[in-house]
Length: 307
Image 1 (tube, rainbow, N blue to C red):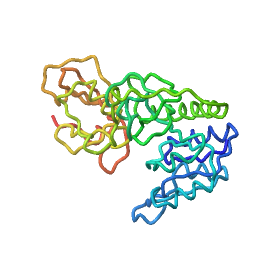
Image 2 (image 1 turned 90 degrees about the horizontal axis):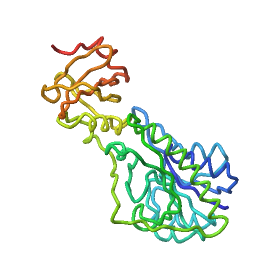
Image 3 (image 1 turned 180 degrees about the vertical axis):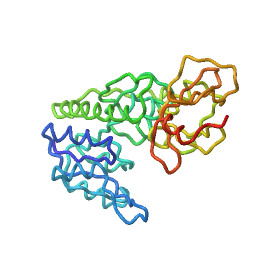
Image 4 (image 1 turned 90 degrees about the vertical axis):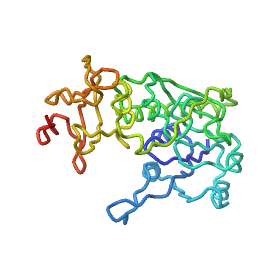
């Protein structure tokens, strides 16, 4: 099929590659504008989807806006049969949604209607979900509310960080997309309307989510740590010192009657901290300001905890 693909970050790359492998004619890629990077913001960094597209000789269009008429005209010139969107980062206006004869479909990293919005992978981990997945849906005016064309689920490992789940779901999304587009090419595909009463939302992440509240349970804090890895990362000031980013931890079998936030021990195994439910969380990997990520044991060699 003749397809225009719209995507920006790493999550979308496996979806674009899946369409190319399947032999579809991806005539153009829409992606977000390149971002200034570097100390003085004097260098432009192309998006991962742009890099992928150019490596396959696919032209890339990077409009600042989709609502000035220029982007719509550009899309009309491409005459796509189908538009595929995966983590593009822009809302398509109605004229675009109505343009391709076979519609506009989206690759979303949750089992809709749960976790509509910008950060479904992170919020599934933050909330301690045991399962998530990917959904291919028709695009509608309301965010992530279109009819479901296909879904595939996967368990979330009890210690799996958000970045690892992200990579797994990106691959799953590409595989499910290829299967779904093949079905669309063959004829009408059954559509399942979402039950909006079951919808939950996954807003964008912010640094306000980072500080660890030791009055919460060990499992909740563990989920916070893995759900915010790699950004914005959970943070804590151990022993009253400077705030540290915390990237990996484990819930131990220990119990303690000490106050939440009390440090039981720190050594080769990590830093053991009492949580609000009396359980003990062991911090395994952290990062001090201006330093690299390291094991808690390595950090303690140069920064002994106060006694």
